Length: 296
Image 1: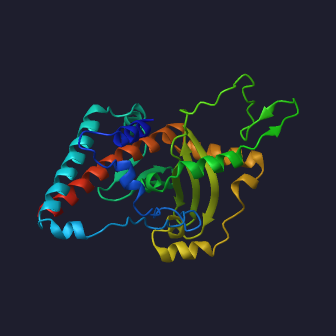
Image 2: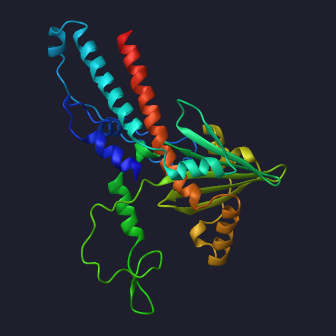
Image 3: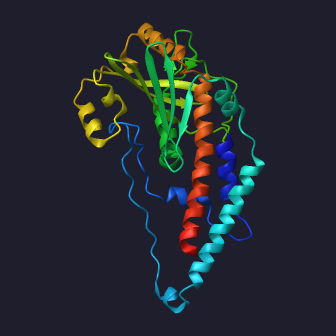
């Protein structure tokens, strides 16, 4: 994936021995995405702090650290710019933007991105966030995946994973380089005037849409949960049973219902790649803003 290549390039040592931007992001406080309900948002991780002595700074001239920091920020900006110039727009993003019925709504400086379209008498809004990159912990995700992929004995005697596919019996080595992409959370809202809204929580990963929850709200505002008050009100509404506990035929029909409205594998490929593009763009803007502040 493009994100993996970029992360590797950022973490590689360079002549100026700059801090990798991946490490910088990991040290930030994980910000929960505003598009997800409180039941979905991960716990806010403790802010990481580094101990240091202030005596060395007191002996330095007032502007010395400012100048060094400005130079470092400039080197980061130059590096990110070179990476951007070397990359081509992924086919998944180009094809989706050219052929999808969705309108992209992306506001500079904001973490959340929305896709909006009409489908008959419905208004469909799909929201995702670059905060998933900051909150992503590959170790925790791999543990969850391992718990979900407990091996089951099938009637034919072959070992099957959670998706029911036989495992390769000849596979004797684990491919350490094959890592799953960052799961991108989707908040899908389908509204009909006067009829309320469906709110679907799903994940886009490895070209697949994985539905996790399927809610109905009489008040469409609760489906968007754009404020803490609305999110709290939504928690008081019966959400329906867990999607995985529904009858399998019902699950399949609901998935086809979403696919008919554009929640397809093309969307599942587009979202993670676009998140990566937006993250780089926002990171460059952040670097520039900090540098302008330090230089002022």
